[in-house]
Length: 418
Image (cartoon, rainbow, N blue to C red; front, side, top):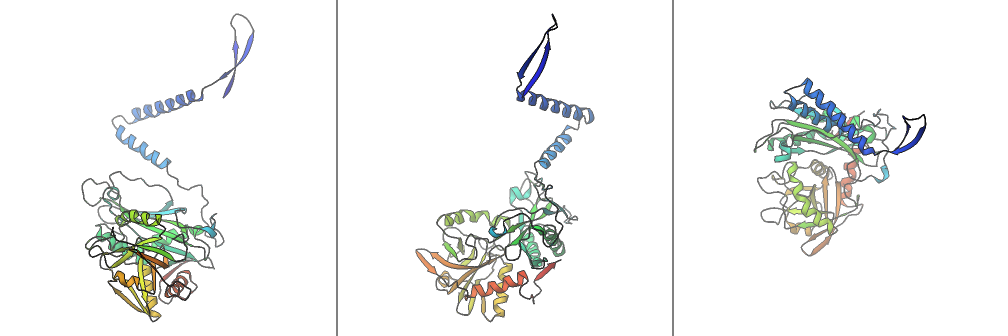
């Protein structure tokens, strides 16, 4: 910055004009020094002896100031023709936060307060929060779809609510009622309607999260819990899209063991799979198949989805015995398959049956119904049927049709949001 300064000599009337280059960091230092003096003076004069309270408040202000609250975004008007500015034709599976999230608290008495919507952003959490130190948390995943007429559809959110309750009980946590859960999901879908992709372009992935947010030191339940729901528009989960997956049978690591928490959607179940998954992906595989922890001979599930094996008119899937998550898509596909005349069996599926199968496919909220093209076990690579006439594609077509409203929902699985 350049500053002009007129300097008057005292011994005559002559004036000289000179320019001075000023160091901006000097003034910046003075600005911060003045601000610090102002804050210190006001805290000391107004709250002597209560400095600790003020410091906590100032820290809270800083946390809020650093939060990207998205208030600059246009508030949705819920018009059918209004969409967020995204490339809907190339939508992948990743975090693109929608405008609003839903937050509801629960204290020691186990009663949840009235939840509310707020702009999506960071939350304030103690470093000693139960979820951070002891992993006390569960989550769910569901989706909203847009119909041609602009209305939104939710697929079986009540089942997600029930599964969260089961998981919360296992992790010794209070949980929202089914009505509270479903209401929160509906509010999130409606408030973020402009982030729901056009028909056929994807879905709005909705993530309900329940965690021990209260501070605790020593292994014990948290004194406070927070229920949060946020959303993100997504496309296909795998980079292959709806193309066939290539899976690798993992023999070194296991996903869950009998008596553990593998049967619930605990946040502690997912980080341990990252190492094996990363190793498999580096070798060109889409995902991995886990075997049982005891004999390592029976199929369990993939990293984040259930598995089905097809042989003739029989469809087998590993029985949920406490180590396998009871998927909502899994349950729905089993019912659809049974309606279509297939014999559906829940049992212990030996890895040799997988190798000898006609088809293999995966199911889950994120992946939908995904065909498996190959499975590699030891040094053997097996290929499977994946064409349009495959069992997988027939079941997928029905399920997608029900979810998106192109097939009549005779089972009462879909909830409509006007």
